[in-house]
Image (cartoon, rainbow, N blue to C red):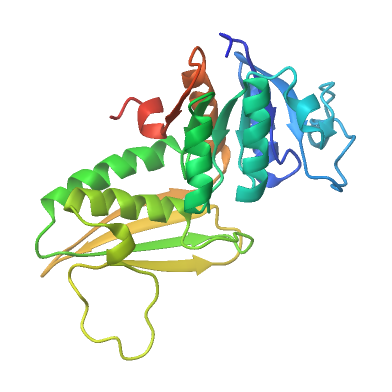
Length: 270
């Protein structure tokens, strides 16, 4: 990947997140919009990628992966797992770095991404927000300090259009906490309660999901002890925070030929 200006292609260019990413790229002095992708059949195909802003960029929204990536250093992808894995293979062919904000991958998909990272540089994170990734670090410390006598519950809320639950960010929070406690999230997570469930098992980690309206993304982790409750929360009011984090990821990947990184590495929190 070349040093700046960073030539960036955007997947899902006509979606809410895609448009936010395009705006962020246009506003960044060290970035250039190099390509815009959307699914076959999208009414946006053939339009200028910045038409929604009343501007002309010369970059046309296309479903042709090879054309969209031809002049790009990096692709930013916040789409769906199946689409992202197709884009992944195209990035391998073209030697294009990849920033993955897509969530909901199964184990096979994660393994495919890890394999591709031996050939291209990838940042993959369930949440590109700088604030969220700082919260993850705080949760790691809190879990270690509150490992005895505290029940831990994760509550998340998102807009009505989100298709996966719990959110990738909530799951990442659970993974960070479980690791800090020496547990395996796969065996200690509780994703729903109904009926007579019996007393709470103190070794479990609970998740609750809310879907509705236009909530961008709210996450709260509660450490519930005797006589006190500690809450660590992050609330997003705009997708702009994800876009800015994604650009930081692109900058981080400049000069790196291969490897799989997370936002902790991008932000130097490791």
